Image (cartoon, rainbow, N blue to C red; front, side, top):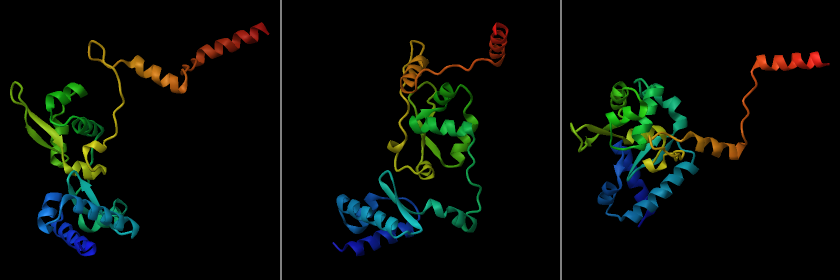
Length: 214
């Protein structure tokens, strides 16, 4: 197998496609095994890093795509993309996080976690292509469920949902509420008990008593 020739072929496929190309598509086009594709892709990714190129080869689940490097965004955006960059509110980010950590979650379940309506946030995330419908759930009313998209992975720089940061561990009581005491005890073991600052008025009283005694 001529590695340089195969690298050129894969590069041409990814460049021409302008989208994520699955490993199976590359395997069928070049008649190569999965291990051979993995080996060559790894070499190509290292090439783009070492040669200080303006593009990079990213992995998204079982697909690959050629993209401009993040540090080149400010130069590329004014020339090619006149659309508004997604502007996500805190509420939208919270909703997006819930969906990312809970694939195939329904709107009612999102609202149960956040405690407020999620309609506006879900519509906005769908508009930006960061989430998509994941099919109806076998529950009364057959509600629609949602999951994140590859656009979400690309936007936040993840190869898959497995790369998401691990959530802090906590316990639930009989009412399914977070047991705060456990979190406080764990924090105190690391940093020591935190003392509440004395109110300003109380400090003034103590100073006055000291002065009278002296």
